[in-house]
Image (cartoon, rainbow, N blue to C red):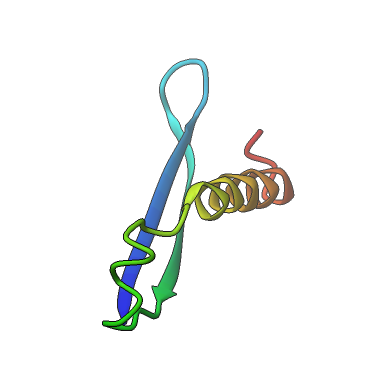
Length: 68
């Protein structure tokens, strides 16, 4: 089993550079592998969906907290 953890921290600032808020999100993805299948499936799982969901979740929270 392999575990990848993605962490995204976003800092929102006003036009003068003053920090308005900070949002930190984290997500883990576990991948199960079998030794017999490692030759047949040598490629790692696509993680773009996880990163997109982290970004979307961060923006949703920013809107709720009125940071945007």
